[in-house]
Length: 113
Length: 112
Image (tube, rainbow over all chains, first blue to last red; front, side):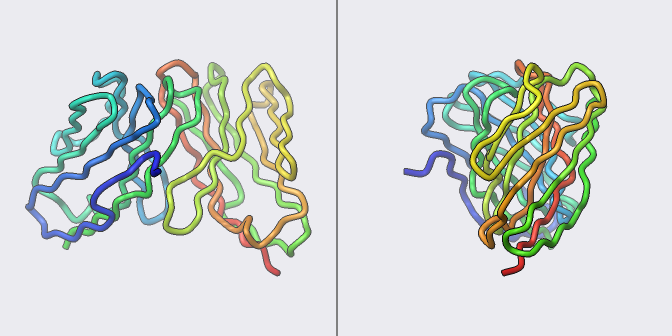
């Protein structure tokens, strides 16, 4: 069974479009994250949720809106996509915050043309 | 905020040799230091971590050392194998629900 799953795996879209990425974890964790990994492999946190509540928002443009319907799901909606949004987006989860192992999903490669 | 620097950015070693990756951090309040391995096309995976009350931790061929005074920590891989080839990330966190800040990554290539 996949611990952290993301859909879709690949997303190719045009500038100005709106898209969503979905994430689900079956580990029973209460904390979930979104990370962005750019072309240089730099991994940067975007958001963190604990029990459906936003606890970290790292100066991400408000075109990005996370939503956590329950503690097993954390989705990412992106409005008005820009070329600079092209990256790999990773969802992750952990049992409690930043001092426990984070389990990463397989990533969603977003390409904006 | 926390800043984590990682060196080298690329590292090539012969199979069987050792590999060392070094990181420094800026926030003296950081107390949790994980290391992640990312294989091509996959998400990062934790390989070892160390907390600030410990100076060294070992797990088979992998060891991590921490010097809190100097604010640096290192990953040591002995008897490297081709399957060790990947990108390795160090990271630091204050713990609790504070964010984990990742280093810039080291691409390790083990040459058979």
